[in-house]
Length: 120
Image (cartoon, rainbow, N blue to C red; front, side, top):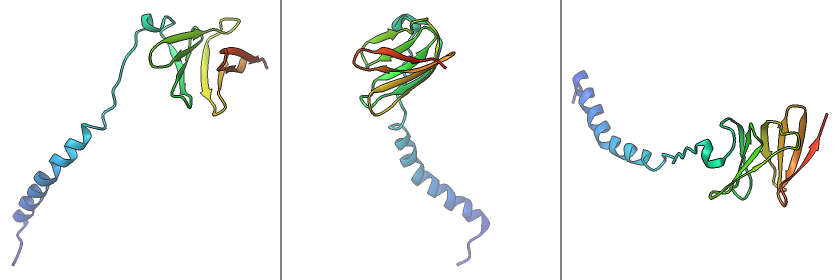
């Protein structure tokens, strides 16, 4: 049996029609939910510089006004002593939240969320 070039088109079309519905259905479950929070919700400045998540799935944001903490229900704002902008945050596995600001670097203890600042 000889397969002509125009038969390839029909073979490919049939394969696509049989496989495509399964691929499209799988994409519906991988779409993440995106929730936008206005600054009036978390009561801080509108610019967030960085974000991290700790081992308890609590989110921390470096904000123009300080360190924002979000546990999925409520927001808390923690400020540095000189009210500097926190531009970077990172969490480690020991419960420390590291933050960096202009001329300052340090970490926050999760127990009291008090800053431990190291100035260069």
